[in-house]
Amino acid sequence: MRQLCPPGGPPDLAALYGYPTGLNRAWVRANMIESIDGAAAVDGRSGGLSGPADREVFGLLRALADVILVGAGTARAEKYRPARIRPQWAGLRAGRPAAPPIAVLSGRLDLDLDGPLLTAAAPGARTIVITSAAAPADRRAAAAAHAEVILAGDRQVDVAAAVGALAHRGQHRILAEGGPHLLGQLARTGLLDELCVTVSPVLAGGPAGRIIQGPDGGAAPARAELAHVLADRSYLFCRYLISAGPGSRPD
Image (cartoon, rainbow, N blue to C red; front, side):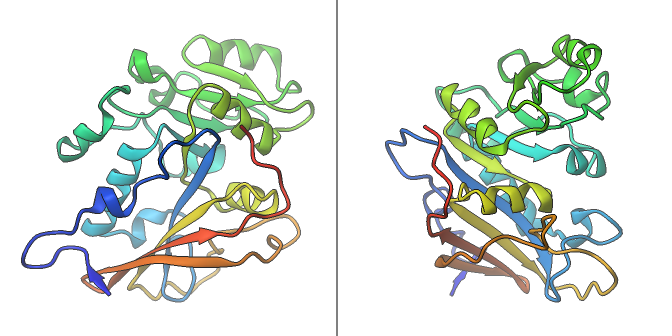
């Protein structure tokens, strides 16, 4: 087992978490945290489970990504703002915008369309709002005033179409940060390529849900291969590669 921050210095985390080279299709990586008893949040937010090393890996994964994909509920609950990359990872952005844009999925556009997530993004990394053709036209126009708007689906957001639209823009390295329902959709459609899970040394108890959820109680079972495990101050950092599911991979 590797240690994230050993006395001799950390391992090459960027290499350990690097995406496959020469990608010509979308590669969807999810990053989530859970307690040792399986809770995805404490008091409705994942931040209650986090720690310094988890935030370090969180920042690295953002620096490696082309775009960060998140559901509207998570964006609201976690008070999302445009991504900012820590100085130690800035070199990983060479040839790309200084930070990856946030792409938020929202079927009803139930977002603060004048909030910082949309209005405070840098010009080279404008927030992307992914919605459906059924979303209210006035809300779509209001979102387009500050963000890029992508239509993916007619009556509701089609997550496969959303991933395909991002890949078509050249944003192949997709980091999904939740929530559990978005991850459930990605898993059910066979779009999830890997899952990074931080196991927090917290006994959460209570009614908190799991990191992957869905209307039918979950996704079809899929096999996963453990790529690595790191440890730091009783936190575990697991990276799994997911076997291809039934869905088609967007180019």
